[in-house]
Amino acid sequence: MEPGDSTKQARAAAQLRKGVLEYCVLALMRDRPRYGVELLHALEESGALATSQGTVYPLLSRLRRESLVTTTWQESASGPPRRYYALTASGRAALDEFSHVWPGFRDAVDTFLTVPHPCAGDPT
Image 1 (spheres, rainbow, N blue to C red):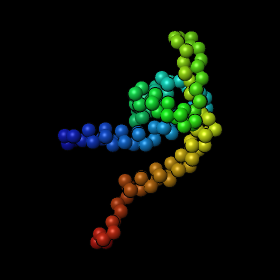
Image 2 (cartoon, rainbow, N blue to C red):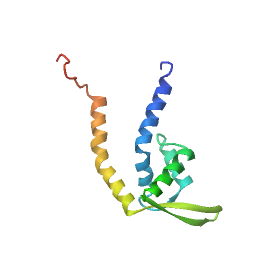
Image 3 (cartoon, helix red, strand yellow):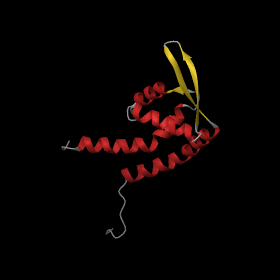
Image 4 (cartoon, rainbow, N blue to C red):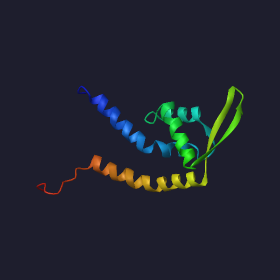
């Protein structure tokens, strides 16, 4: 590995994560409400989507302002009450739209990464 390769890879991963994190968080709430730390743990378990509280909590606040999620407080057996986040109808619609767009987007990127494509003007 060349010097700086790991930095470049980290930067590329951060950009990819930034583009899909919102929808991954919405997907984690598809079946049931979740609280913030629970979301962080699920993202961390994926490996590639591991992120920090400083990223997830502002994202959750924005999703709430955009009416994609609602929140409720629930008592916790192991500490203070927790704020749970749940999908709204708008959040579910946004997730469904992304779910329809993602396969084509993913396949297009995979095509460019795996098959050489001549550019206009290149000799064939």
